[in-house]
Length: 507
Image 1 (tube, one colour):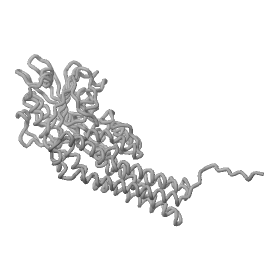
Image 2 (cartoon, rainbow, N blue to C red):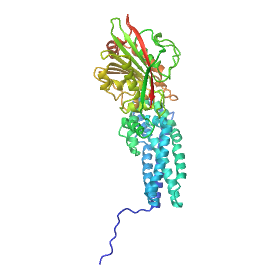
Image 3 (cartoon, rainbow, N blue to C red):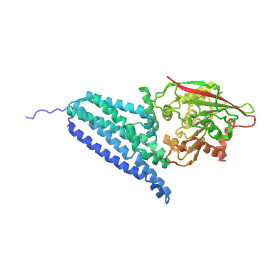
């Protein structure tokens, strides 16, 4: 006679053994992280650039490969984040065996609440890390904090039961330390990227792979931005709002004549930007002296030629507020607009420009030049790629400076000039290489490197100088842009009027 049946309707495991496995995984993650630290030390060795002198081509290839090891999808930190994620799953399984699903779910919930607070409080830093392809380290530190909370829960479970209040304090402490830990981790990486801006676009393109490997799948660069903006559906973070667009009674920095070239157009954008002070006056002396503007200003210049033809120049400033929670009466030129624009979504700044065009009475046959710096250029190119906008207005020309617009296809008939500095990481944040075409001219310049101030190449004075050089160039593509855009520029008998609009978010 056979023995009794043994029926197992589930899996049995020893939680102590699971804890031991998780501990080993944490040890592996620590070892991998140490290897990454060694690679970073090698990458930032001041002697390294000297070795490039005999063979610059080989050095460039080696630099790209080293960057991938330090910060890319195959980096040690990315691997460590994935290992820690696995350790967290094992630790959570052990906790479920000890205290049951309901109590374990409560631990996970409080950890998630602590994580949400960190994201809200430190989103600019975290977003900046992701934007420079250091998402791996953020993911690693978040997984590390999560694991420490689970370990604390396991310790309580072994000794007698869960104290959720104590665990909530532990979670708050651990997740609250993520920002400082990431900042310490990547202090050397910022210098590395400033010294090797040519690899930034490849690193940014790898961000989705890094996050996916760490258990945070997003798809691509636009998907990473969309994942963040989706938080607006359930939290105040990156939540889109309405806008109010009002004409300004007394415009400042008014022009004496239409612009005579790209530099004077870009100077008009600069004078709408809160971060710019025209200490030496305006380019060509075109604009009346004025101090820094209030935030949230968009200017339209109405250029009327001697024969009565009318054309419009729209000047769109860049980011003015890095707060991750859009506020009522705040400027829409903020972090939310940045992320939504990269994700290919409608933005409050874009809506403001369209509203300003309508209020100014721009006719359907009157040519429009959209000009912007940084986020402003991204907004300009996005509008020129939007069929609804180009169907209502005759967008013919776009001028961008330091803007990540390589993934945008503007409408037929639109001519684009993009000014980009080789040392400026911002244009590379779309994860794509800048390429000219029949409708887009990319003007690149080495504005000089300053590892101590990696965003200096993104600044106004550098881009105004680049625009001056472009005006002086006899390149056929730039000459074609100027000829086709003659309606926007000064000529005998031409005059200019301006309309400024104040744009604020509303609930």
